[in-house]
Length: 202
Image (cartoon, rainbow, N blue to C red; front, side, top):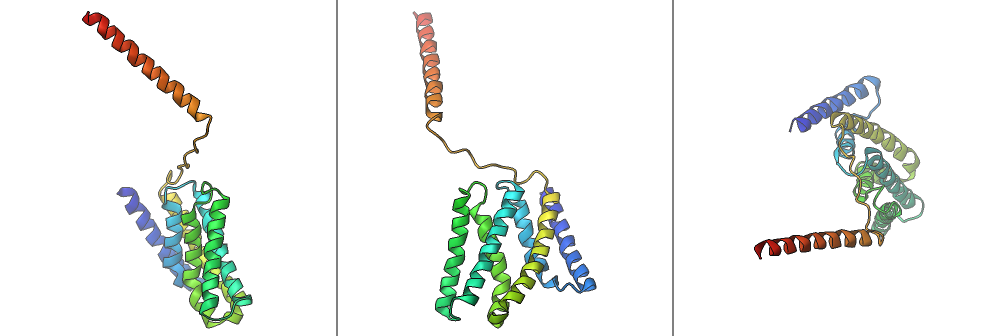
């Protein structure tokens, strides 16, 4: 509970700092303070693989969503069918990325989170000015990634040692003989104990 409280307080301060710095420097990223810092915190706190694997998976999903919007702007019609195909492209790319990493180095949930983060904040600017996608997408991506980075760094420092678990090694045929040998040894030990008990009883 203390770790959660510490992380929550530090993330709150980080979000407030983002707003303050953005306002003072005219960065115009204060609107991404909650979504960006919170998303980065999730990537930093979830105890699944190492932090860099999660961050890499998030970045890959982020790029997949970016590609989806590029396809919609350059190839697909501005209609419901175009939207549907664009959505399908994003999800297919996310799955391919996770499968290419065997789900071991690039977890699917982090890939999907990256795609969701970019899509969630960029859908409205995209539909408002599709021809300006080359400019608006870069602006949104840069602003969002800055705040995500803040959340990720703060969460990682606030909860050291989290997320270092490694996916279990898949069983192979080489493991079976060892397991059988162990089982045979256990059976032999049980048989010897039973024989000794019988002799004592006699």
